[in-house]
Image (tube, rainbow, N blue to C red; front, side, top):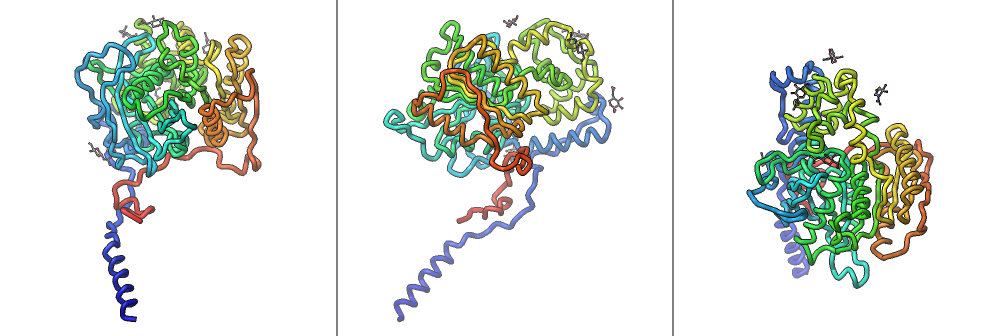
Length: 489
Ligand SMILES: *[C@@H]1O[C@H](CO)[C@@H](O)[C@H](O)[C@H]1NC(C)=O
Ligand SMILES: *[C@@H]1O[C@H](CO)[C@@H](O)[C@H](O)[C@H]1NC(C)=O
Ligand SMILES: *[C@@H]1O[C@H](CO)[C@@H](O)[C@H](O)[C@H]1NC(C)=O
Ligand SMILES: *[C@@H]1O[C@H](CO)[C@@H](O)[C@H](O)[C@H]1NC(C)=O
Ligand SMILES: *[C@@H]1O[C@H](CO)[C@@H](O)[C@H](O)[C@H]1NC(C)=O
């Protein structure tokens, strides 16, 4: 008896010794590093009225609260030394293990970041940042995997137009569960360029790095060069084979990757072309400038002189539009901030003759994917309820004309009735994870032709959550993540 009692006492006291000391819970907050208020000059520059200023501050402060370590303007990682790179795809800086405490990545995933060289659409060498999200165990596809993690090259949609818009600095990598977290937890390693101008803002020679917004060629270069640099950094950790995936602006970029590889002029990407397994395109951006010039003219126009030195922002915007673009640049505003800013005076921000200058039509050859050769196989998922149906029509007609005049191998168009812009990925997770798996298993695609299919919802469409309401939220320090018991079991 005595012995049994002792054992009980012993284990109880052992337990007592291991009980965690719980931190005192503190109110969760979205105000980390974000108490921005416009100064008088900025109010005057933007011709802001009190309500508008307050709304802008609300969104801007929220956006800033989502930046790990204060984001690219404050995080030293995004600064580079004076170096003299001479080719695209060179590695400039590597953070093998980023301390993930300020990020919201899932437990048992790991984050690396690196800076490398890419080129603008016109070939100028520039620095770009990228992230790598690692799985806990790497999915294996037979002997050929050889312990390495299978690569998904990911091109993100519009996350911003300035350094602070970089997904690598966003606590949830901007797309959270929708894409990178899901891929890493399924055993893939995600390699994702921020795109030039997002993340690194100052080049090795001190010049400002500009964003070529919605330029499928420059974004394709950024993705491909990120892959090339990642191979150099992690040669024994990642497979050479890769599947190429993108959504929205990044859907056009990923389509652009397949087009750049198909064209591969001057054998620029020979090293990457042979290991390409296929592309998955979600809701690609097509003809966005024409659909909503009130916002896109500023996003694209602010850096368009990089391509067309004679372009002047006044070709597209009114004096008010130019001043608001200047204000947006000062505060590095993201998508919603700029929509508030421009749509508040939607009829007054454009130069009415914006679409009469040749720049708008010239730019579509850089922004619009399709209607040229591509590297097969490809699959395109598009919701019918994406922004009222216009993107669906655009994607379908671009698919049809590409297949008719530039057929280059297997290409499938998948219609998603009742599905909106971001949910094109949520609604089809089973299908695209399977598609990726099949490519790594070297399974032939169902059809060598251009084909169409439809995926319908299980329950009536109206029963479902229609929109993505937010990315996962970062709770804060240990005493603020009490939902999951800080330091817990
Ligand atoms: C806030 O920004 C500072 C840099 O100014 C950084 O050290 C800190 O980690 C940031 N706080 C959070 C909660 O991200
Ligand atoms: C960039 O390329 C475009 C298309 O080839 C060309 O029209 C433009 O002049 C080039 N711009 C510069 C600055 O080289
Ligand atoms: C752009 O246009 C504005 C207004 O017409 C003019 O004041 C400015 O000098 C122009 N800038 C350049 C670089 O041509
Ligand atoms: C912008 O819109 C506001 C609200 O409708 C209006 O009062 C103001 O005059 C407009 N500003 C300009 C420069 O047109
Ligand atoms: C420019 O847009 C206006 C309306 O937004 C339209 O009436 C006009 O036809 C367009 N011009 C050109 C050249 O596309």
